[in-house]
Length: 185
Image (cartoon, rainbow, N blue to C red; front, side):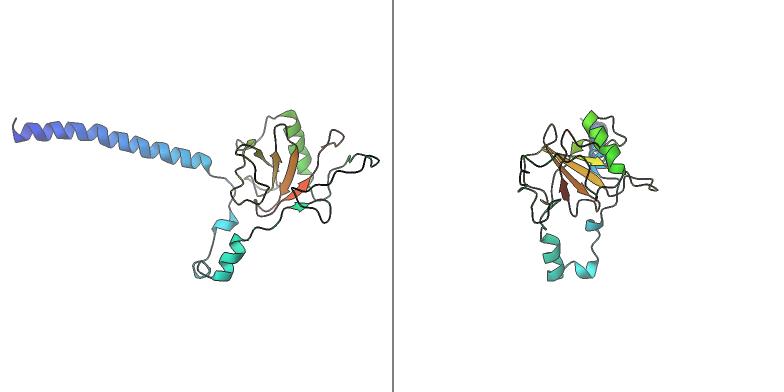
């Protein structure tokens, strides 16, 4: 076989290989794009001078406890109300009015206005009690005047939901609240 033939043959093999690698890169980019969140995440923006600061690192790595709607309680430690107490019928005051719409959609099972609603919330920061993958789901609470999803979310735990958390700062902190059959969203 001549040199020219070998060059043509190897060139013929390179083209499918290059096409395969390009297709693989496009697929990986599409997957990454589908996993990202539309709302800006303030926790990823770290100034370069502060990046090596030990105090800044300590603040970033410390995990604050999840707040409960009852004073003194933690998320994993919700006391059972006494049997004589009347059931809660109203939503907590810290929830914005738009949360009612989101809670009604969750109760009905959708359809949701945002494609990310109902997606698994991975609890990467560990700010909620540790559970298995797929336990938590996230839903958008619309913010009036914004063209994107904003930072407000309701995160539910369980299927059907047994735990409810609200965040208005894009997962930096959570407040737990309860929903019962008597609670009207």
